[in-house]
Image 1: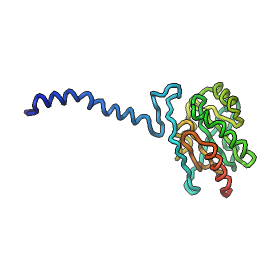
Image 2: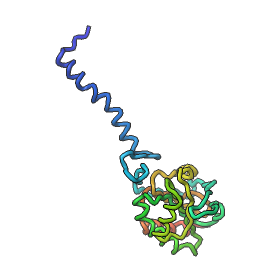
Image 3: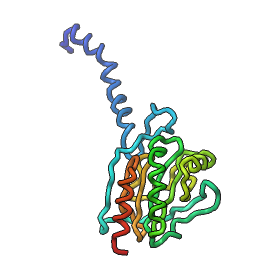
Image 4: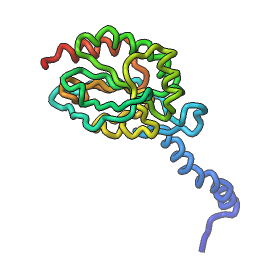
Length: 204
């Protein structure tokens, strides 16, 4: 026999909708973070959550190689990352719809121009986009390095261990094709400049 007083029972019944809604609210909040975060409230950004600005550097003995990075370039033609074996490679995941991608674009191009003669290559991976918009973005920012068209963002899954978890994300590979660093979110010109210089200074 339930001995709970009627006033107390009434208060619990009144609070029941809030108690039931709490797990749903927590689940919704949890859905805005994590490795494949999607923010349903971000208009015009394809649902991506910006990065946490965290730069992760991997010591030489703990790096993992990346394989199978190939596809169609946004200006046509086929590309295979294997052709750059023995070079330091900067891979930037971007989209023309992404404000931080626009902010970092000029710095990326400058680091590329300053280092391409030293054995450094840059590859863009254009995600959640269409080739025409990607080409317009490259013209606006005078980007001269190639970009693969990857509208489904499937190539990110090949970066085992440090999968890109935001747009933009920049991954730097050492001369052995292994992941040496990942910047989640916008990367500053000085950060990328110093990171490339460090990788170039490592023994071949």
